[in-house]
Amino acid sequence: MMFEFADMSRKTSPAGRRSSHRDRDNSWFATLRAFVTDDAEQRGTLPDLTESQILAWADAHRERTGRWPACHSGAIPKSSGESWLAIEAALAFGLRGIRGRSTLARFLARNRERYNRLARQRLTIAQILTWADAWHRRTGSWPQRHSGTIPGSRGLDWRIVDRALRRGRCGLKRGSTLARLLAKKRGVTYRLSQPPLSERLILRWADRHHRRTGSWPNHLSGRIVGSRGESWGKVHTALYCGGRGLPGGSSLADLFARRRGARNKRNLPPFTEELIVEWADEHYRRFGCWPNSQSGIIRDAPGETWRAVEAALYKGIRGLQGGSSLTRLLVAHRGIRNRNHPPKLTIAQILAWADAFHEHTGRWPTVRSGPIMDAPGENWKIIHDALYAGKRGLLGGSSLAKLLAIERGVRNVAAQPRLTVEQILRWARALEKRSGRWTTRTSGSVADAPGEQWGLIDQSLYKGLRGLPGGNTLARLKKLRATAAHAGNNVGPHDVA
Image (cartoon, rainbow, N blue to C red; front, side, top):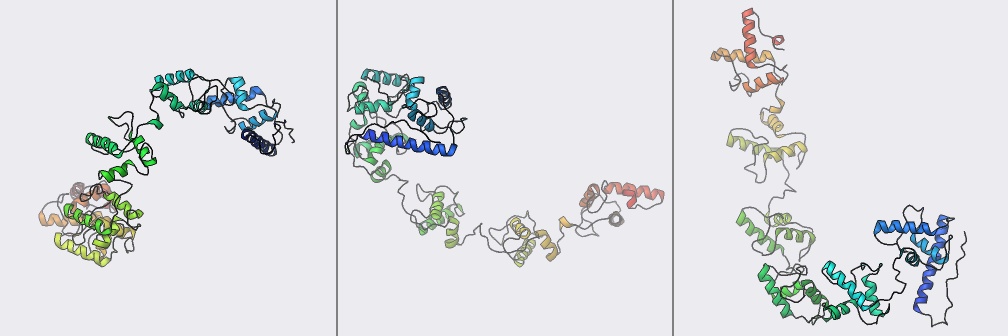
């Protein structure tokens, strides 16, 4: 589809005498023509537009965003691929049924009373001061060039006012600014006319701040008490950028570190491995354990923490190589145990520790037996996990109880042999024959079955464990035996099932 563009260009002056604003207009029209060509190639035949349709889209945009659209506002929602740049092109060149030689800003200014920055509006100093006074009453501060839209001015903002004062537009004299106007008419502190600063004056303010708060100020510490409108942010900017009698290239932190010995977080002293190990030795002598990243402050180094040491060792900052950690450093220099890389285990070693435990306590270890006396840092739960999961050089699929059952013949409670009623009755008759009384759950160990307990047997009878039918007790077996004896029969499995 071919478009006939309206002749928007003006007759140019001879070469070398073209004005800059005319060059910008020609460049903008060329950009719009290129956009129209690309849009036609991508979307094909484009439907006509109407002013009411454009205004409806503009009203929806303002309701959604709080601002009127501009040519750079992007795509128009729910419009079948339309964009505000396409609307701008149609208004400029008179395309798609729209009258040309206009812009989106002029169109909205005419139909919606939107302020058009290109349309010259006369301003007065009295009007600007009235707006500034209203702004100060509402916000408690005087406006700046970045303060945004001016309420009650039909879309005018403070940036446009400042530009008009600078360049002499809208009926104003040039050479002023919003800040200079407010400084002259309302006594507002003007940054470029602020009094000079000196390091001596800044240090006097800082000493007063330190006595009051116990800390040195930074650029976020707010207003300076005892000064006329100064803040630590302004002082920091003057130290860093220069101005107000200061050479620049410094900061509050640099000044306090140089003149007051304060700690500068951006210029910290270097670390050495020997120094860190010395701090770790002192920590061990004081607390009886080696430090880690969670050990807090370093008492022998004010301002330093073990977390900072860990970060420096890992990242390679403050004179260290990097790629290390506090644990690795202490493993290398003090031979401590590294929890992330424990030494390998062997079955012979585990059995030696178990034999020593049995000799010392008279019983075999379990997963709840706690630390291993002959192996600092080890405990029986860790040994059990390694046997089960196959860690630290072990095969896996085993456990501490299974190992001791196989190698030392220790009874494994989790894998007890099956029981029968005849077997339990035989043990009970033997006990009755020896002691003259029937067994109970509190009768202790079974003399004819090493490792068995009458309490565990009673529990198995009741819960149906170890191959028993369940729902019985040793007391019920006694009653059944008495009933069977009265009837002249013996108690069998069918009697207790």
